[in-house]
Length: 344
Length: 282
Image (spheres, each protein chain N blue to C red):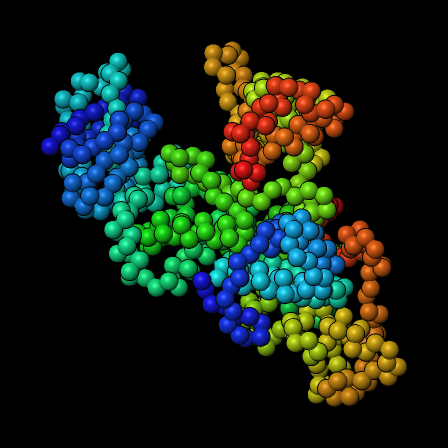
């Protein structure tokens, strides 16, 4: 039995616990990655989040199940004295804390409350339910996904489990397989995981973007125009631009981030908050800049939904040039990695 | 494979959807509701774009294939008539949550309560509308958190923008899509209190009523136009008394060579085609 006592100098507010893990622990703990370990008793895999602080721990305590590991943690609430000494700022150990299998969680950073059931558990779960019940859950998850996607907000697995799957969580993989099948065969859509660590998904279209008459029939949002201009700027400049470049270009188009715009409202908020949340853009701090500066990149949703070739064609029309005259960008657009899912 | 029941009541194995079906469905999802002409144009364009066999006048069969697949999801593309203009519309409706909670993702509890109260006013009214004054008075007596005047106006604007309500000169009525989607809910909640059209048997909010105290049947304004078309001596279909109300003309949109242009201009029901419309209230 390996007795692991690790602390992280950064988690000054977190309580530290001595825990005993089975020898089958695998993975490293650093501040921001998950540690994966197996419970020696029930053999379920637990995802351990290192950023669990005391407040969160108290919350989880209410939902503990009887995993041996969690019991070990519960019995050691106080900081052991030998840990105290290594709590100096110089120490660079990681802290290992446990999350059990229950609890509700709206925290953006954590997804520990859901543990992936093993295959045998799924089989046993399925045997107890009728196909109709599974179909019903599938339908509910699909509805839930549509409601979330309406606002283009990425969908968290934790939310799907908490709000929809609930008691059926032991057959979660089976439900999600059914959901994926339905989204594809009925709607021509697909769930794409944009954050593998926190299990966050967006819904993307497997059909090609509509052209011609069909385009006129799809209602458009004026913000899409704004977004495309910005995506165009970023793409033409090689994939990254300083925010000042974007604001200056928009100002030339009479869209001033300082003023309230008739169609877009608070322009800065739409671009740096809404588009970023929707994963169309990334707004990243440039390190070592004084005063603070940010840069823009394409977000994951833009990568999967927007065709760079079509964007380049649009730029060609705008500037009355052959798209191929921008050789670097043209190569970029036609390379296989950048071809959207729908066109593969 | 699920076994579904088609409109005639026969079990039907759900046929797998082609890309043309999926495209049609996606466009319906984006629009929510489309008028008949646009639906027919969409059918043609979807088939042409994806190289599927196109048979004009087979829109309903095309939709039935999609509906067979949508049934396990409690969704349906339904056909209905608008109370505003009597024209045919196709709407994608949600049948699982026929409760008002369907909207609950977007609206707070007290806003939903306001919507329910507005619906009460509309159902109880003679002409299927509720005045903004009456709705504002309701806002004062909400059991959940009360809404101030400005907030109430804001909620009403959102309800219009999201196509649950229609506003005309300060009077609010339920949108076509709202009625199509909430009809089962309305029938369940209001039961006998809701007016039903004698001709088409659907919920009738904007309608005419027979003046005979022992009869009192209701007919949709547009059903009146069709039923009494061309008759010089209109008589109640139930009690045969003289029908005293003005018989409107059957509404016809200007003849449409280019379908989308015509329906854009003439049909008053707000839809999110092209740019979103902003209702600015003073």
